[in-house]
Image 1 (cartoon, one colour):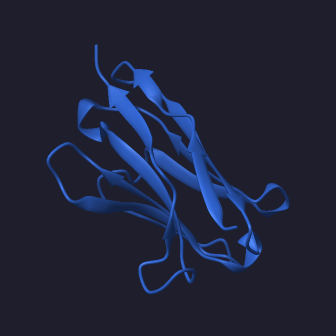
Image 2 (image 1 turned 180 degrees about the vertical axis):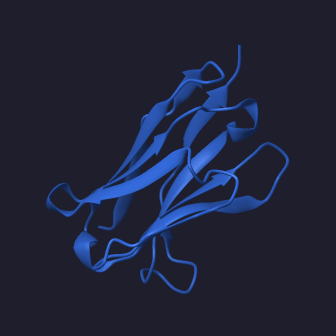
Length: 118
């Protein structure tokens, strides 16, 4: 059974950091491009970062470039997102996505809430 289970969200003060994890089950994790998306309150879901399967090349949204780092551990079938210097506008539900599974939109986790506030 294909599953993506996110963890690591929570409440953090502005300027703080969090590291999200996404554990994959039921598919060959190392063969799939993986991404993080987020949905801010009242907004559409938006792309955050992607890491390719073989080359591990990364791409970031302009809004997070230089602050967020996506990485993967294929031996643990786990995707990560290190988020530094978090700001209130980063408050969102963060989702991991596996490309190439379940159709054109890929396969999604259930999301983890990140709240940046004093």
